[in-house]
Image 1 (cartoon, rainbow, N blue to C red):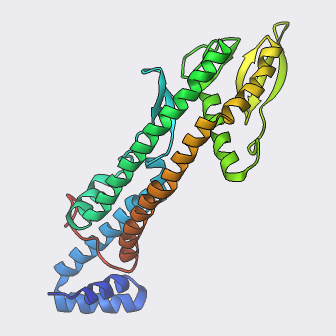
Image 2 (image 1 turned 120 degrees about the vertical axis):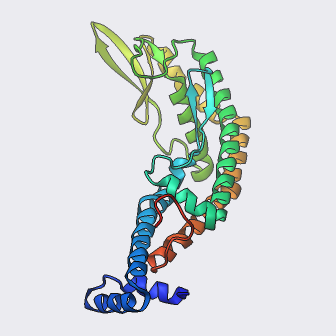
Image 3 (image 1 turned 90 degrees about the vertical axis):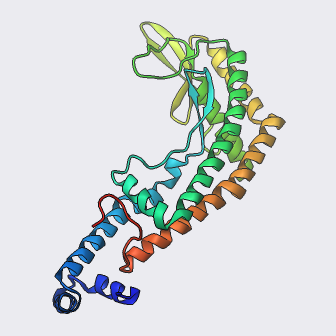
Length: 279
């Protein structure tokens, strides 16, 4: 039985120049050509899974368990973003087979992180829907939600964009104790077919457009009123507390677990377990 120390030694040295050639020759003589070739293939496989799945999964973890809520045309409401597995990675299924067999805690922590993310986003969606409803009730304008192939009205409001901007402003004021940290909404105008239109621009988004200048200008104090609404401030505070105390901890747990495996492979170890491509 080859010891772990020898496996690590061979993995680090095989193919490493003159010394690697000597070690390879000795390993072949002692363990046999088939064993050395099988070890080499498993080593290449371990590095491939690590580089093309585990490292990318680690780097993009926040994208897969994204905190947020978006508008759904299907339900007509703000809905929670759903966390997902990194199935876009070509060899994820193979990596998962290895993890299920020998690193089950990584998948366990990942599932816990997805659950925490789902619960947080569901609560966030409720708050954002309250804000969106308040905006629609105040402005009484055509509501436009961008999608491919939809025609944009001349006069319209972008309720989902304003909603997201308002929530970010609430977050910013709580974090930095400063108004309009990311930029204050402001009114601009332009001519179109001999008509003058007024727009509310906020962080490069033209969230309101109307021929009525007063309506656009009056939107700024109304937006500030929503931002300063005590119930929304309290709800943002609770959500941020949960994100810091639960989501971030679970994310760090996952990162720690998967980094241990990555570091082990980089030190020359083989990926434990089996998948359909393993020799």
